[in-house]
Every structure is written in structure tokens, then in C-alpha cells.
Length: 552
Image (spheres, rainbow, N blue to C red):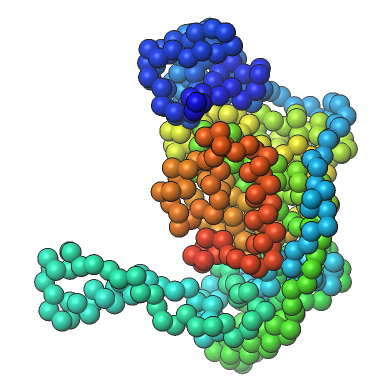
């Protein structure tokens, strides 16, 4: 029989509705009958015991809120009667013993990756073109237009074809009513040609709105983030465009690259517009195009070779989350994360506002008190900065989150943290730092989808797993993004953006562990270049720098 509700942790005093339940319905739980006092939409929660004003609500085994009024047994909890609350944290309080999952069947498996001289292995072989300041965005886009179509990397544009079809019909005398009912064909632009460079997976062009007119910390953080992109093993070579007078100087970028990778030897071509005396913009762009083309010839010589699974670097993220995120997709990729760590690989989890309430658990899981304290410092500093501008972690849930059952930040965070699995925490990194330790790393970023995924790619992730309950169309220029739906309805509604459906967990058809193993198998094929994710097919190359200071 299909399950209608779920208790996530034995200590929870709420149940999660798996289907829509009606006021007056009765549910049997632990030998007693609970009569529902309200309509309970799927993904929302109701109480298994009455609460007085000020009483605590626990979910996932942790404090997630306090009642703002008396709430009866079987009553709905929502924003009108529950307020965010979370436990304080105080450093590493006890040792942590981890029982790693059995990975014997993957122990001798490999993926076909791109080996770099520093020992890292990429899942892609990209050339990267970046601006040090927003003033160069136009020139970046000029180069993008010049390269992608000619070399076979341009995305097919069915929408341009649709505009062309409408224009053609109009010019041939079609009436307004004809155009209202015009049927579009499925033809795609015919300029999608075979790629010239078979071993180059793409040329990626970044643009951003930073690099100048901001405080020193932000400019330096931008350079560190971009240095991380240069060092990321998915990148084989880089072209940099600089104006010259901006805060984010070439020297800062070079210093950051050297700090992260002392023996950095990838092709790196830097063009500074103001310092190329007498050359003019057109000559600079022509030379940048020439050098980039020659660089593509060079990296095209690199071929995929077998690599152990210990070379995987996996980022985990959730966005457009719903009340099923912490039950299906998040714990599924949490199990995948544990498998990767057990195989000797690296995992990163970001979005610190969505770790609110589980800090103590993560501190206790830290391998040293120093790592635990650094994580605590980063969380407190982030909270302080938010409070300084009149915000707070309690404001994190979006309208979409709340509509689908994530009514406090602590509820959202407790489910979001499931992406991290159960392995020990080996490091806690600030924004713009590069991950160097195998195991689970905490990477400080906002919950904002693109800011978080941008940060993890800058920390070295070569694949990212992104769960969503509502549907989030985003990707990253250098890091393949795998989209996992928390429910089958979403997977069927938005098939163009979803790669894996975790809905069978909700239906009771698959276990979290079975789904986590399927995700690992998908990762191995993706890392070997056997297929692309939906975000890659759509060309969703989203990049956004996290500016924390004022503009000057």
C-alpha cells in the first residue's frame, strides 16, 4: 500500500504528508489514531502531539522551530504558527566514528578523464576566456561570437528558427490570425557542425559585473575565484582580458594562481588593453583570437585516459527545494557523497545559510577542533554580515520553498544538510579558497544557486549534483551540472532540465541507497564523456561572483 505520511527521525514530533490529506482524515501512527485538524498538502507537516506556545518542534532529529501559539495534535504547522529556531553550536564536543559504506564493487573501476601535470584529473577539457573587469565583457562576447559557431560549439537555436519562420510567413502575406495559430516546426539551426577539435569539449566565456569600483577585499576575492577556475582540472588553457586600471590587477590573479598551484603550467595568455601601447582594441582582439586558436591546437592533443574514482571532485547543491528534498534527492546524493569519499574522492557542500541548525553535528564530525572552529567562525561571520544589513538566516526560505513545505530555515537546512552524507568533515573553506583535501569539504557560499555553484567550481569541483523540487534551470561553464528531481511529477513536467528522477524513493519503489548508487554510476559515465547533462545541452553557463562589500 502506498505510504501517505513519513516520520523522518524517531525523535520527530511531526509527520510529513506524502500525499494530500484532508481535514478530518485519520492516520494510524505508533498505535494511536491522529485526526487531522487541517487540510495537509503533500510535503507539509502535522503534529503527532499537541504543543503549547513556545514548545519546540523537532524534525530530522533537530530543533527546527518554536510554536507561536497552541497547536493541536494533527494540526498543520506553517508560517503563521511556527517560528524559526535552531540549537546553538560550540565547537567540537566529541569524537566521531564513521562507518564507511561498502565500495568493493567500485574499487577497481575507473573513469576516462583528462590528466593534468599537477596530479588532478578533469572530467572535461575546456578552454576558458575570462575578463578581469566588467569593462571587458563586450570584448569577451565578441570573441565568443567569433569562436563558437565557426568551431562547432554553438548551441542549436530553435527559437531563432521560430522567429525566422514567423518573419517568413509575414513577408509572404500571413494575416495576424494566421500568425496567432502558426505551428512551429522542430527544425534546429543547420549551423551545428561537427566539432573541429575532437578532444576539446568546449570554449567557455565568462562575464561578470565586478573587478573595479568596489572594495579591495572583493577585488582580491574575484581574482582568487578566477584563479580557482584556472586551476580547476576541467580547464586546460586560459585567455585573460584586462583593461589595466581596475582594482583586480593581473598581478593579483597571477599571485593567487601561484599560491594555489606553485608549478602551474597550463597555457595562459593575458591581454591588457591599456598597456598594449598603440595596438588598439581591434589589434588586441585579433591577437587574443590568434593565441587562443593556437592554444586550442595544443590542448586538442590531450586525450582521455583511465583514472581511479579517487580523482572525482563532486560538489553537492540544492535549489528550488521542496518538502521532499530532504527525504529523497538530498539523502540520495548524500549516499553518493559517502561512496565517493569511501573511494578516496573529494566532496564539497556549499550554501552555509542552509547549514543553520546542523552546525553542531558538522563540528562534531570535523576531523580536528581547528576545522570545527574554522567552520564555526565562517558561520558566525556570515551571520554577522547578514545582521549588519538587517537580514538573517531565518529569512532564507523563498516563497516557493514555503509553499512546498520548507517553512523555516532550520527545516530547510536540516534537509539540505543531507546532501553531505555522513562522512567526516576534513576542511572548512572560505569563499575563493581551493579545496586540496580528499573527503568532505565545507565551502562557504550563499544559498543563491549560481553564487553557490560558481563558488564550488572555483574550489575545484569537476562535477556538481544539483537537487530540485520545483525546477531550477541553471548550470556552470566549466563544471557539468546534474539535475535531480525530488519527485516524479517535476521530472515529467520539466524533462528538458532534469537528468535523474528521485521520485521512486517517495513512492517506496527504491531505497535512498539504491538511488545513491545509481547516481554514482551516472557520474562515472558523465566523467568519462559518454554523455552530457541537460544543462550542458542547453548551454547553461551561469557564473556570478559573490560581492560582499560596498561599491565605491
